[in-house]
Image (cartoon, rainbow, N blue to C red; front, side, top):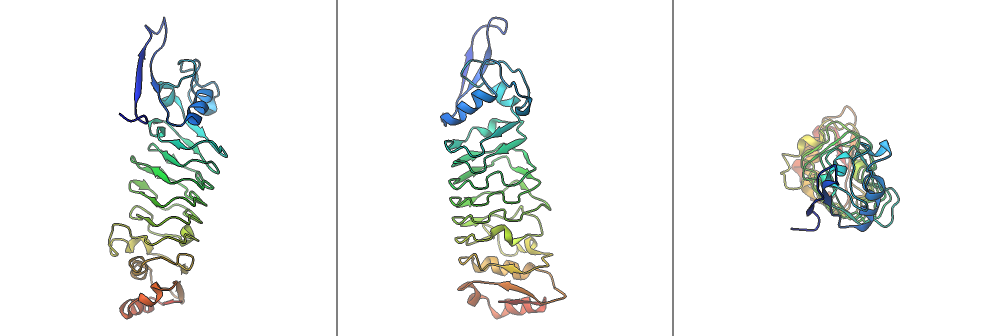
Length: 275
């Protein structure tokens, strides 16, 4: 059994004579130190800002019961943290803050994220696991400047009709992303300066992704994405709505020269033009 998921059971008599609980183990000692100070130890949470107060435990340890009592973790500007893959056990979490920290890997439980930018400035973030999905109300600048992030599995994310402005801006290592669960209207500022981004179509076909670009009423600009592929461009062309005024689709080379005459005519019929 891995260190990440292993739970040690200890029994110290009855609750009258001692504590009967489950000790959590944490891969990153910085994470354990923070949690012992704020939610663990003998007295549990003493500041209601962190969750339910007074869940008793063991000196120097964090129990599973205390984890369930926790509603907030805040590692902003922490330059020692590396991994928090046990966070998925925090079933009642409502607030997560990691921006400008040194986090590299993290797993999130299913939760509602109401404020964007929770990973903004996390330049070492490589891997985010969300196997239970997420409900996101605002994604503005969520991964801004996450320059080490290469891929992201967004399946199970509820992103309906939210602000996606600059969601992945300056995530210069991002190569691909599955947009099948993203809202119908997509703001491309979301991927500004993602210089290694190749595909927004992912494992899905061009036709499956057409809906993503419907209703777009402003210019689409891929010039800061020099590696964007033809399948993504074709999905944009098929998906955008007819405009009452001429709108530009800015494309970098070489994909600009790969667009067929058929697709150019489709775009022209909607009063758009490739630039």
